[in-house]
Image (cartoon, rainbow, N blue to C red; front, side):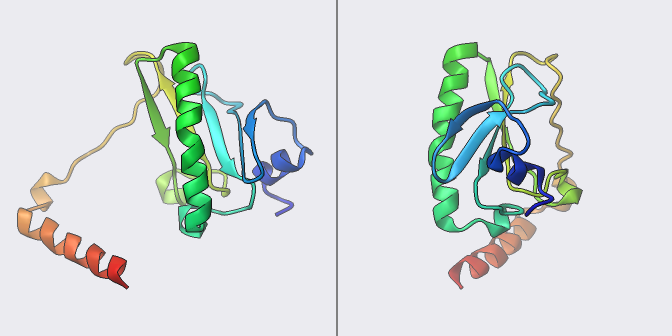
Length: 141
């Protein structure tokens, strides 16, 4: 993936501020941080999004996630932490190499504003049960 900025970071052709690396994953500081300590964790194998990760890749990546989260917690003492991961342009993905954001939260005015507009008027208990059944059917395949 010669055009992928994250692949170039892994190759070392684009500089980064590394905080963690093993044979499968690479973690580095976000160059456009939302808050102090904003870190990205990526697989070394190019995977566009979560749909492309193997179960093994995902398991390893998420086994590293608590290590990074706890390092941020111990060092910066944030009031909270957002883990953010976008898949596809409509979801806000801008770099098409899977990446997990670690965004330490210090207070409500720290610059990050995740918002959700719920659709409870469109979500009766029956409709939620129907949707759950559809998802369960796919998981059973």
